[in-house]
Image 1 (cartoon, rainbow, N blue to C red):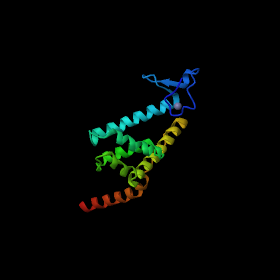
Image 2 (image 1 turned 60 degrees about the vertical axis):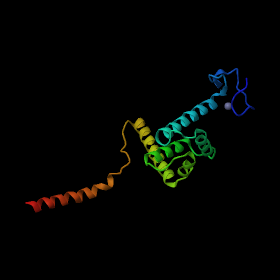
Image 3 (image 1 turned 30 degrees about the vertical axis):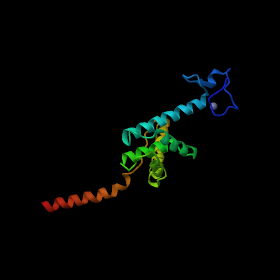
Amino acid sequence: MSTNCLHPESPVDTEDSDSFVCDKNNKCYHKDCYDRMMALSNDMALINDLWTKNISTTVNYAELRKIVNSYLDRGVEMDYIIFCLQYVIAKRMTLNYPGGFRYYLDKKEIKEAYEKKQTQKKFEEMRQKQKERTGQDQPSIPVGSQNAPSFAIRKQKEEGFGSILK
Ligand SMILES: [Zn+2]
């Protein structure tokens, strides 16, 4: 049996039915390759959906896919590409055609926002794991801790203001 995978030197093992998948057109793929292909196809559908709903209904899909593929080939994560598009939409940045997407994919501001999000995600995962292991919830990122002294100062001010009114 031949496969539709792009590595004909390793045909699917027909003896091992768990190792390959055939789609509805009877094209067969190694299971790993099929899973990768489906994940890519779902991600591209999401990008297309975001684009047509928020940017342009008449997007040149082939051009958009070509740009996304060229970034994936360079080792850029699909998660980042989707994040970048969501960022551009959320911040109402100017983007009208697929070619312009390159500018944002390379934009430092968006790369930094993504890295920050990844760091927070890792922290939350660690926290979750710790919670599962110990049964105790850890405090989330302690943003409020440095506010404690200023709260005390504010309280004194309020008391002082109250005494003026008397
Ligand atoms: Zn394959």
